[in-house]
Amino acid sequence: MKKFIETLKNIWKIKELRTRILLTLGLLTVFRFGSYVVLPGVDPQVLQASIAKNTNPNDLLGLINVFTGGAFNNASILALGIMPYITASIIVQLLGFAVPYFQRLQQKEGESGRRKLNQITRLLTVAITLVQGGAYLTYVKGMNAVDPSIPDVVFWLSNSIILSTGTVFSMWLGERITDRGIGNGVSLLISAGIIARLPESIIFEFQSQLEKGGALMFVLEMAMLFVLIMAMVLIITGVRKIPIQFAKRMVGRGANNMPVAGARDYIPLKVNAAGVMPIIFAQALMFLPATALQFLGGDSASGSGVVRALNDYTSGPYNILYFTLVVVFTYVYTALMVNPQQYAEYLKRQNAFIPGIKPGKETSDYIDAVTTRITLPGSIILALIAVMPAFAGAFGINSSFATFFGGTTLLILVGVILDTLQQIESHLLMRRYDGLVKSGRIQGRSRMQGIGANM
Image (tube, rainbow, N blue to C red; front, side, top):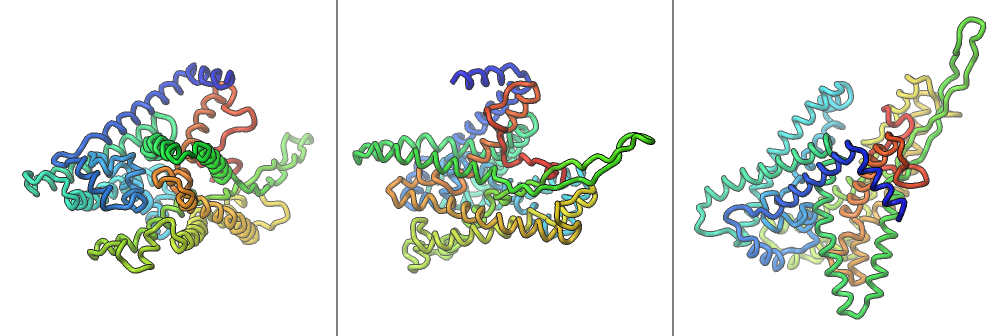
């Protein structure tokens, strides 16, 4: 406890770090306040009552509501939150793997290319928001939560503009946090929404277990949650270090020239290079059957046995298919993110090599083989994390709290916290203070060691 208090004092002593943290907290407070400002013409109580009666808290809309911190179900001006921006970023990132123009912007045009990509992402965000905003207003109107005295044209036009403005404002807040605050702004906005739902879920679960006479069960649940968090820390920070060596070089002048052994370094290949993306893609596919049935005018609860099973996150077929999709998408996304040929070319330019491996194609094949091997356990662990909410639900944990036992929510939370703590620790070490932990340094998702940071 004494060490913790001393660390807080050191953080407060550094003016720049203190300013960044206070600015981040202030902008997050503004974002959370916007989650409770309701769209004009919408009755949020009627909407919430209709949602509780007609929708599943574990479907796509329930997931969006978790990411927006309840703003979606509140019919807030920030109902779409930062999600359109994330969708646009994913699309631009995928285009960078397939379209030569975007590849050139990402890899060869440096800072100017990144600025162009950011501008394209912002414009695409506005376009996606207009489409999603129209769908959201249709959804709200279908729930009979709109004041009938308001003309349809006024309702649609005004609220479409408001929703788009809310998303652009959220995007601006995220960029300001990234530039002048601490941590990744977009990730922190999502985490703020998730954390906002956590206390309510814990209290509700505690009350439920007390009513069942099982306070001990609640303690076991919290212990299990702690173990899961530790497992996520391991998979997020885990790397396979491939040793490399730089060729010998001559130093000195004239007769004093002496060969100096090349420095040793390593390539850090992450066990989970794909991050949370495989879970997001797999969830999107798992939501398709029920979503398609709703658009066709049906009900997932009254559909065929297969549709019902694929809409029930606790069913066996759902989790088997979900598990498989996460493993497959982990391999696919890792193949897109990790380019062995690029590593091999970089080593060649730096006059470096992997001991026992010839430069060029053999180096590329070796890195590819190592990446494939470490991706297997990483993908399996990630898939187990993805299906953990189903196991939590099977043991009687309420659905709102079960979502924190794995899946996208907990993985995002742990990753964002690690990233933020790593940035705070960097500020402390730069001013010659002790770090946040006694042994080693905190490693976030963005922390790259060795030559990986230079590629």
